[in-house]
Length: 111
Length: 114
Image (cartoon, rainbow over all chains, first blue to last red):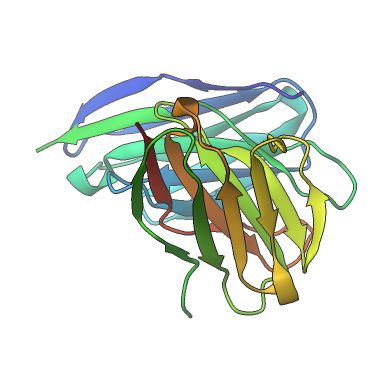
């Protein structure tokens, strides 16, 4: 099956700093999503981004499908950004949308 | 719009006991997913329903896990008998249709098997 690798595994920032999280995948994908899992365990959609670039406030994401990677940018980080960031891809083909998750990046933003 | 609801939020059982989890997806969402998330890992898909039919259960340990989605709305996931390695968070997600749609996740049920 498809392999999804995220880096770095852990990241510690001071409030206000910027960061870039990376997601590499081993095969062509139909779709890609970024999620934030908050300290209470809730998974929250950030981006649905099979290709191209999207922005939402301080967050933006870019997926280069031909080179099999996606980047998540966090600018002016806040303590509420802390948690685990997951990249998930769908490589199933057809109409069966099946997400495979990476192991995540644990982000800690200190005040 | 109400999100995906799950219950219970926490459950502690002893090994070899049985347990059931309940999920109510977002209204109108045809596709429902159950995931297992072991500590330190990303969620792993257990089973996917399209309305009340199973689309994918290839990673469901069928000797002990079962799931159903009667009437194409609510779903239950059951483990019988539970093993220590089943300790995890069980997440339910739903999406509008089977196509390339964003999945929305519930808060999860944290299961501890002693």
